[in-house]
Length: 257
Length: 314
Image (cartoon, rainbow over all chains, first blue to last red; front, side, top):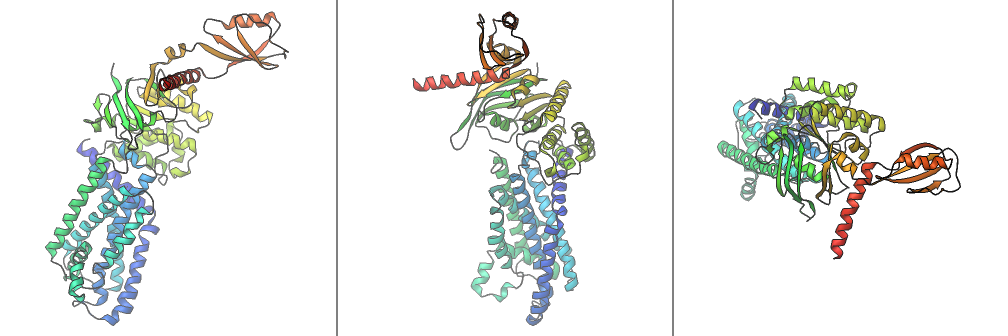
């Protein structure tokens, strides 16, 4: 395939993935917006007003970056895992396997679809946040780069989950029992300085903590974690997951007999 | 002559130990309409899966128009279109998108993909359904959608794995006509089917695969000439009580107005009719009891199985 043909193939997967989640926007885009609005009302407004400031910000403003990031993480992951598993389940992944598209483009196409949903939902949640808070963007480059990189990371993780999944149960186990607890314990609602020293150490083993704090730096200018360490962790995970996902596709795990 | 498909010593052993292919060799010439027949579980779909890169082979080689599937995979895949046995498109996409997306995977720009999608959907009678979700199509329409999708990148070799399964006779005949036409236009076609009438009507060459081995690979006419005896069913104008002595013919009575005659290649039907006329028996109509290819297919597979049983007993 020429470079132009490869670009067309990649674009086709991206358009297909984009249309897939936009067609069902009531299931994909609307629920996180409603959930986040409820978080703002309950945790930010009702409970938050009792908590007072955190690291110099109103509690409502302090939780904005974490809630946006939670929506981005969850949706990037969910889009790819459900789309990839669905394409295996209905066997239309074979449309790509019989074609000359190289595996790295199949991988990139699905990941781009996950990133697209992460960004669309992230933008919708950010727009919702402006109704409740007065957040100003402290560093636009950091904000955007962290969101995009985090989205790529979890889209890759979703694809790996999709490769191994053999039933619809398998695509909900990781999000429910791993992703959600790690996200909630990743410092959305608190700074780890509030934790006892031991639990601060344990929290540092949670990669999501680095992403939420880096994004919080981008929006608010405050973070518990060194920004460079955050970038290093995120890029390191992306490289590792990309290699693993590509190896799985090259070997045909879960998709070829 | 250019070979559209060259398979050498192709083997497939599944992780559970099942040997699906035992080192098959196969050549299909460019422009051919080729039948690949075999009973269920014989290895047809495994072979097609390997050719289409959906199944990993254990060993051997596959070349599509000279492009090796291991070393020149993209070029080999570009030459190939596949209509699989099972529906494998996204049921939640509109018909036109199924075809346009497939074109995109081959690097065909979207505007051109829409043009081609229109052409093939019109030719296959699906253009009016282009905005319908694929899941809402009838079985026959879904089969035709898979043909349109397989053709959109204009493959030189089209493989159809039971394309007319579950399709009514009228649509089946129109699909045959369509396949004949694209074959005449230069597309090489490999067909697997359980309708042996279909293979006999469409294909010029044939391979029969059984238990992971090719047991016959020849020209259709040559194969049909191997049939030594055909059974004809004769419908009589008047009922008869018993069959008169008919020298040289094996005839038995099914009911008072129906006879079955086994005619060997050495005998002629004229002789049988003369004999029957001599006794005042008038034949209204006549038909083959079974499809000729079906008879041969069963003979060949039975032969193979009896050899296998004999070998096991020894």
